[in-house]
Image 1 (cartoon, rainbow, N blue to C red):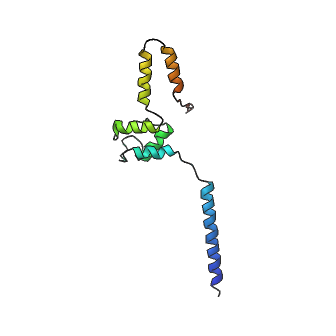
Image 2 (image 1 turned 45 degrees about the horizontal axis):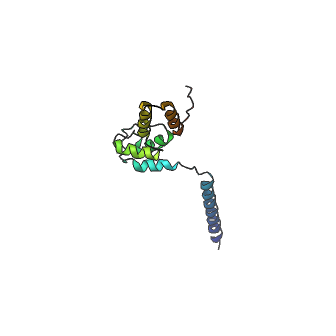
Length: 130
């Protein structure tokens, strides 16, 4: 009979700590950008480090954060760059080509350029002080 109390106390403490850890994991969870997983699936998965990042997970995080270009994966080449560009919000090269066509078109150049630039997304980067 004297063994029942310690087993009950330890079991109760285990249950209490388990519930506490479960609640803490919900409260302190960090939401991750879903585009990181999409970009990671589009990359070839060689984890070679040729891009300068520690594997494909590091490159995917850098691309979504805007620290690496969409064509940073030299193993995947142009097909992977196009898929990653689609995930990141459209083909960037297509936007450049459209702007060049509008620039060299006759008539209404300024109006068309203003319209095209207003449709593009820009990222404001804070200056870094070293």
